[in-house]
Structure formats: C-alpha cells, structure tokens
Image (cartoon, rainbow, N blue to C red; front, side, top):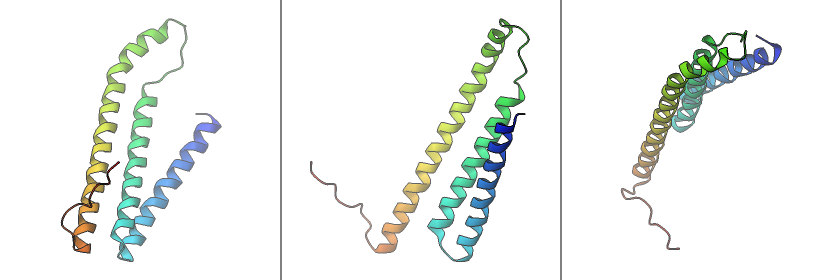
Length: 119
C-alpha cells in the first residue's frame, strides 16, 4: 500500500466516523432529517470501503503483460455485482428521500404533492 492509498484510507475513515458521530448528535438533538442524512452518508462510506476492499483483495502485482488479460475476465462478474449493489443502494436512498418528503408533507398538513408548474 502506497502513501496516497493510506492518506485516502485515513480520510475515508475520518469521514465515516464524523458522519456516525454527527448522526448520533443529531438524534440526540431530535433532528430526524439531519440524522438521516448523516446515516446515509455513513452507510455510503461503509459500502464504498467494502467495495474498495473487495476490488483490492484480488489484485496482485502483474508479473507479465499477458497475465492482466486473465485477471480482467475474472473481475467482470465482480464489477457487475458491485454495480448492481450500488444501483440498489441508490434506489434505497431515493426511497428514503421520498418517505422523508411524504413525512414532511403530512407534518405540514398537506396530504397531496405540490402542484406541478406548467412549462
């Protein structure tokens, strides 16, 4: 692991810890939306870390130029699975956002979505 990788790893760890602590503090202050944002950011950072570990776990130094071709064929299913995981996470974050907006509309007393503007 080179210095640049270590710096990014430390930065990502600090980012995750700050968001986890921010979520706890926001929950303590009864700021639900604020806490939700911190939790989503923490979960995204944890998922990114796990994905980074999964990608780097199978990576070995290349001894020959043609050895890279066999590795790229084996990595395609892993990359596809990672892409599907990220897409599923993005969909879940969108669902959380929609639920939060619906909760805010109910709190404000309007049960229907705001009217759309004509263009």
